[in-house]
Image (cartoon, rainbow, N blue to C red; front, side, top):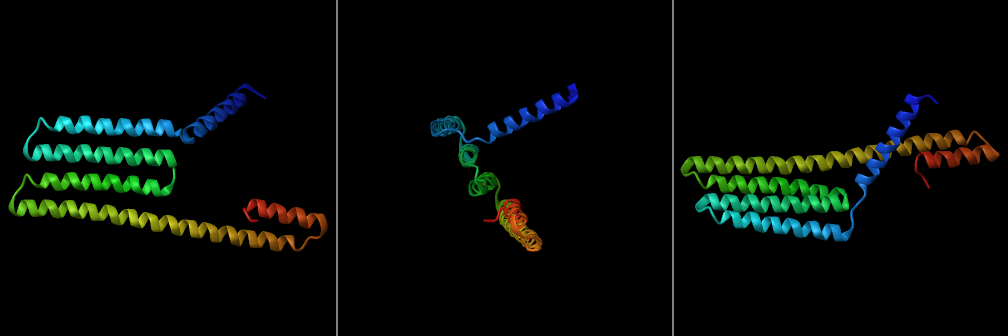
Length: 182
């Protein structure tokens, strides 16, 4: 084997190991420590808002709370890695943006305030609709993939029916393994 091929093989092995390390969930104690750090950071951020007054203080508090909510949702998603927690993370992001945008509208009055609130609400509703659409698209893709795999397995098993004996057994087992059938 030549030197460039060996180098490429080593690089591929290292990237595979790095991918596996980053995909691994962390321990419960690390999770709990990170959660405590997030809560402490929120408290510090919120206390910093006390230097402000009026609506500036309210905006500061909403921003701090939004950062905490997003950080906690991100932590939960990183810990579990499941799609439900990813959706909660996305939801926490647009909820935080909406809360801050609504609070910023309080600096205005009259028609300008009403327009600001409608813009904030519209952005919020669009984000919710996009999340809902993405869930439906993901479900449709999953259904289509499942249908495709079933059709491919059916065709492969029909091809196996033309064989007999050990060849047929090997063919059937190979098709089951290839198309994740039991």
